Length: 487
Ligand code: ADP
Ligand code: ADP
Ligand code: MG
Image 1 (spheres, protein in one colour):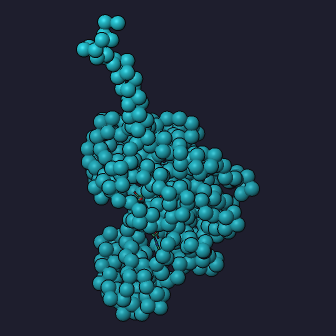
Image 2 (cartoon, helix red, strand yellow):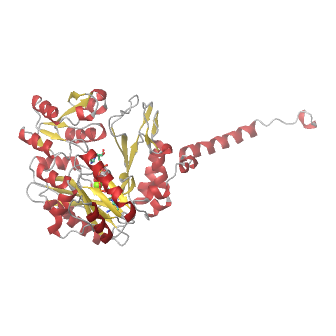
C-alpha cells in the first residue's frame, strides 16, 4: 500500500493519517467546500475537494470519491466511522474499482448493518440475546400480544437503526399502538427501511462492548472491553477501558462470545461487538459495529495496540501477529467526547468560531481533534470537536488526570461539553463505579454546572486572597492622630 485515501473528515481523518504516515504510506484527504482549510486537509500529502458542504454532496458521494481515488492512483480507502463506513454497496464499489477497502467484506457489513440479520446470523452460536422478537413485525395487534408476553416496558427498535436513533420505549399497553406507528414511520424516513422489532427493555443496563480483530486467514483475537454506559439519548459521551465491574471470568467469556459473533459473519478487520449487561452481570448481544469505533483510543491506551495499523495490515492480507496470550490490560483509560454543544441549554449545538484553542498537554494525556483556533464549527456535520483521553495506572489515576486535563483545556468562542465532562468525572456514582445507562438522565441537571468552580480558578482565587491579605498587611497605615505617629 503506497497511497491511502481517507473518506472522512475531522479528528478521525487525522487519526488515520497519522498512522499511515508512520507506516510510510502517502495520504489523500477529501474535503467539502467548507472544510477547505481544515487540519485534515493540511496534514495530507494530497487533498481533493469532492463537493459542496452538505455531506450527501461530498463525504457521502461514494462515486465521486472512487473517481478521485482512481485519478490519484490510490491503493486503498479507509472510511473512518460514520459517513460511508457501514455502507456495503460503497465497499463493493471500491473493490470493483480494484481498490482495497480498509474494513470488512460487503457481506459482513450487510449482515451486521441490520440488527435482525445480525441476530439471525449469531443464533447458532449460543450467544445470549435480549429477550424479544427476532424478525420484523408490522401487524400492530400481533406485536401488542408479543409485547404483553415479553412484559412491559418493551423497546421498539428499527432494524436499520444506528447512532442511538430509531428506538422507542413503550411503558404500557395503552400507548403501544401509537408508539409502534411512530417507530415505523421514523424508521422509514430516517433509514429508508421501516422494519421494526421488539426487545425487552432491560431496566438498569450497562453498555459493555468488546473490541475484536480478525484477519483474512481465520485468526481472531479480542482486545478486552470498553464500558460506554454514560450516554445521552442512547449516544455515548464518556467511555472507559476496562469496565470497573467486569470480573476476569466474565470478561473472558464475553471476549470469546464476541469472537464467535465475528466468525458468524466471516469478519475481517477491526470490529466491535456490543452487549448490554444487567445488574446480575448477565450479558446480552446487542449488535456489531463493522468499523473503527469513536471510542477506540481507550482500547489502544490499555493494550498498546494501534488499531488503525492493525486494520491496514489486515487489509493488506497479513496474518495477525497478536495472539490472545500476548494481549494484556495495562492500567485504565477514559475518553470524554468534547462536543460544541451547550450543556446549560439542553445540549443544543453551539454555533460559532473557536476563538481560542489550547490543548491540554502532559504524559498520558491524548487529544484526538480536528480543529484549530479561528475555525468555525460547520453546521453540516457531527459537532464533535475532540476526544480527550487520559491513562492512569488505575481508574482513580485516570479520573484525576482527566479532571486536570479538562481544567487545562481552553476552548473559547463556542460552548462545549467540557464542564459536563467534569460533572460526570466528579460524580460519586461514576467514581464509585455504581452507574448504568441512565446516569445522565438520573443525575444531570444544568444547574449543577453553575456550582462547580473549576479547580484552577479556585486555586487562583485562593492565591489572590492570600496575596491581597499580605499586601494589606504591608501597607497598613498607622493611625495618624495617635501619639505613636512621630515615634
Ligand atoms: P460508536 O459506537 O463508534 O460510538 P456512534 O453510535 O456514536 O458510534 O456513531 C458514530 C458516528 O456514526 C456518529 O457520528 C453517528 O451519528 C454515525 N452513525 C452511526 N450509525 C449511523 C447510521 N445508521 N446512520 C447515520 N449515522 C450513523
Ligand atoms: P445503535 O445502533 O443506535 O447504537 P444499540 O442497539 O447499540 O443501537 O443501542 C444503543 C443504546 O440503547 C444502548 O447502549 C443502550 O443504552 C440502549 N438500549 C438498546 N437496547 C436496549 C434494551 N433492550 N434495553 C435497554 N436499553 C437498550
Ligand atoms: Mg450501538
